[in-house]
Length: 153
Image (cartoon, rainbow, N blue to C red):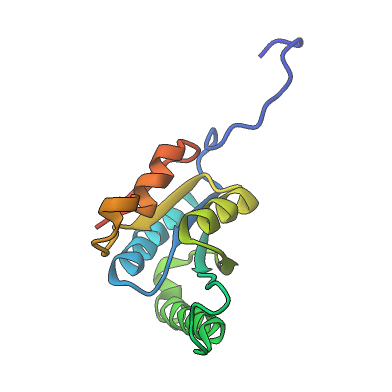
């Protein structure tokens, strides 16, 4: 780099520092978290596990306590992840954190990756038939072209 070129931050130049995995409790997202944990361990990177709490428009839930349910899911995921990490802590030795964001899955994961300065994003393959019409979160993340994205089946 010459003196007239300013230094620019570039993700992944010295290996990943933060590997982010989106989790929602589905089997594919938990496999993605396991895969990301292996990557983080081998790269000595922080594993950031992210759950995006969906927002439900007012009245759409017809009186059901949806906001409480998504918070409960986040708490259950965090407890499951802590228990799993405790069981394998001597084997894996992975630095990790669990964070929740609110919004639709794609927007929440993008915001999380930006805030965490993620070097890589790992997500599970969609288990929904509806993704054929609106595009899966994984495909949208890949098309964004901002991070290396690994999709785990």
